[in-house]
Length: 332
Image (cartoon, rainbow, N blue to C red; front, side):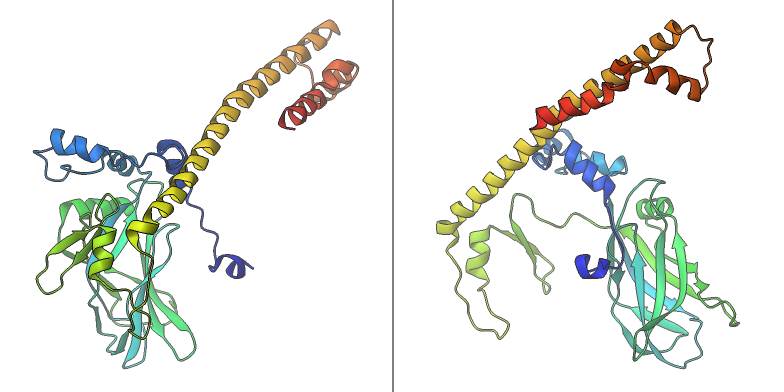
């Protein structure tokens, strides 16, 4: 049922991201891009902070937002399998993020398997983050089989990211422990920082693979430079950016205003109902103690005696019903 409705086998709830959008970003209205101008002036002597989004950086330091970690030079060896050659790949699970996998190394010797690509993991700098799971899998004709795994603490990942110690080899645990092999399986990874890549301000950055240089385009320049093609390579028509771009921006602005109004409504409603419910609970508690005192009982009073005495006071017993009726009338 979960796979049918969500496309995944598990329910993934990003509580930290939701709190960041709702509270720190004011419902998605303030992304902190204006802090880049501040950091260019105040942090001009610090290469890492110059031109950075200070608001987003604060969220990363507090462990609310994830920090990108680059994992490269990936290799595994001494895999617990009896086959002379196989198709292997690595799966990485980071918290509630979608599972990332490498390419499949075909017809590889289980003694040593190399993976040429690099992976970008989004890790939160907090001890509350669950351990990162690396799994080596063998691809079969039907499905796949997990061979070995290892769990790495995210705090240690962040420590190695800042120190840049180079390639590190970790011991892995076989999934099927009844089989005995001479050497323990291992995985080699190079953990390092991932520099900020995306261009700010709605611009598009394209890297030239031959020269290694990057160029930023506005949407209009980008579409005029790179023609839109279909899957067969033929040119396709698309609306003009100058003509239709204003309409598209108006739709986005309308959605932003609606989000702002909804956020303000939630804040005002919470600011009214939370103190009201709290005050009502204090009033009911005081009235409950007054009824017990007027009955001449000695404190402490057991729960059964309290319910009998309170039920004799119709105003106190019907207080919750009156509050719910009042709430329903105000909402209507």
